[in-house]
Image (tube, rainbow, N blue to C red; front, top):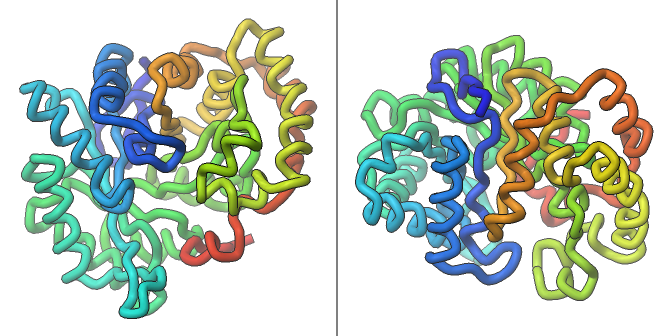
Length: 332
């Protein structure tokens, strides 16, 4: 697989990584055996970058990776592992964020234990805590590099201005953001800022939470998935319209001899050589479709046809509900 840099001074990783939120039950029940099968496939296909977080299944995702590493001596050398912390709850049980040095280090220590490693390759602040400036958050993360607990730092769901400020305090290797043919706002500043500063843009939900695949999650399944059930793009009437609008994309992919998931990931790879999609899946077969996007070479004509069937702003509904927007920075 094509290699891309995880930050200006970071390691080279496969152009497509794996988003291990799917090792939790976010999109349906899963188990350790299924997760280990995905990790076997990652190593077989050259997918070397794994992305997880302490809140994915409240540690379940990290534990699945940790048990795999324990069962497969030497696998750690094949993988570049990222995890995240910041999301927590306040005294009343409400969602809150904590970018303090104490919280970040305590949560990273727990993640290291679950993963069974002494150091991760990349550690993100999962959300920006408004009590701390970007410079302070970068400094707090940077101390963990100095302590040898992570090799690099990252920021998630932030504005370009936050990245620029953080970079003045400590080098940021990666910014994670939702980015796909259905979520194009990173094109309005974040893609450019990351390229200018030598920062990797790690794109999560590259297949639009299934809308950009050959088998979008149907309404009857959405009802059983709390996050999607309250997400505007998966609520009536938006879901039906989004299913209808993406039919032309599925047809185009088939005409090009590709799956829709592969084409969606291939499109992202054209947005800059610093963009690294991290699709997630509980199915080895579906994940293979995503990864095969790295094998597609899209011409200018191909890109024009994709834009024709899915023009900017095609999706019905916001990418988050009001409650889900608690944390991510809006900048456009």
